[in-house]
Image 1 (cartoon, one colour):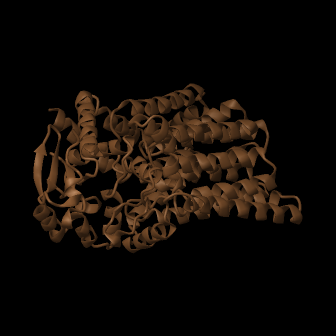
Image 2: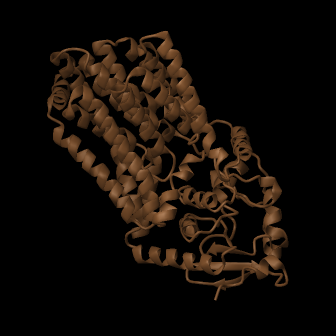
Image 3: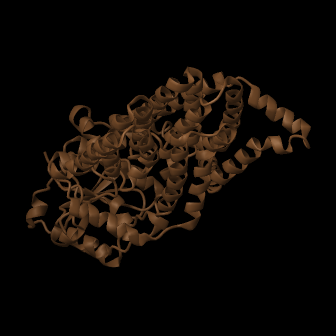
Length: 550
């Protein structure tokens, strides 16, 4: 019965997920254009007028409380929610112990890497040093996500007061929640959202020249999170230019900002085990994946929802020179990011870091005129929030549901985590394989435990799946199986052994790789949740080095 309900909820979510951005945009367009057709449908017009005139202060505060509770709930559940999240601490552990984070796949030594830049891994170093646990690892993303809300609040409060600042934070939460929990998960997205919110605060509080220099530093960090990360800061940077009072000041600010940009960009690759050459090779190969047009379309609808409030406020009140520059640049960057999001594995979540600058722009525009006109923009903001909240509610609810599924099996999940941790301790040179099926994949999330006991990783399927989809052959895995280069493999007892895939279910291992695995390894031990496959050649030195630790 429970499985049937879960299946129905999952199917309903998948159905709505494909249309939620379009549905939100259509509802938004209908609500904000009510003045055009209200005269023909007076009852509807009256209802919308009452909705826009209501005091939403309590709703704003409730949304903020729910967002914080969502974060806290995610901390409480024992596992991650996404297959990439464990990779972040795993590669951070590689960096901490001098192993490669971005490997050369063709050397046969390791199959690890990421399309993410170094700073997302460096952010996990305090976790590995001070409190190595899944909850602490999650706390990094949660901290940046909540910090972004705080910084937007401070930037808007400075111009519009605390009430409007809370309202903007509530709208930001609604816009972010269209993408489930992605705004605080263990990926670079939360850091990028926080960086843009910090940039908006810097733009609001700092002198233009100081802001421009600071944006250079932030842009360098952003690119070392995602290769196109600086696009999110471009609207604020361009809006800074006309505010610098002199050419001398502008040239100096650009020079200092450029130096800080280069320093922030280059520093991680100059210290430790980040290989710039291998990272660039990672990025270059993924360009062969192509773009998904339907994904770009969904991202554009999401982008229009994000831009709705500043564009409607501009129409109502007009804009100054810096606001016009910011708005035009924001619209252009929205299109560029939407195109980039068409990459397989990308999607509408790429649009999230645009939200802080869009809402900050709306706040600036709403403060240009008197109280009477500001009341008009307040009503428009409420209608936008209403439309976005209706569109986001099913997605947000599903995110809670997805996390809550772990609660009935809480003790089992803890037992899985403890068992896999003990196996990594007993077989320190082993690697985790990738089986087929959702249950097996979720069991594999606990492979992060090896990072928490100070081990390094030579194989992880996440980045290889990306590159395999772009054309990288499975033959790069052959050296890991031949001659027992990896002494032992740990696999979940669920799913097809080493038959896992990611994009479109395409298997990661071809027949040649599977043949080499079964030819060189045999099932040695089975435990409650996992099993160990060990090299068939006991005389092999690598195999002998990975006997169980007594």
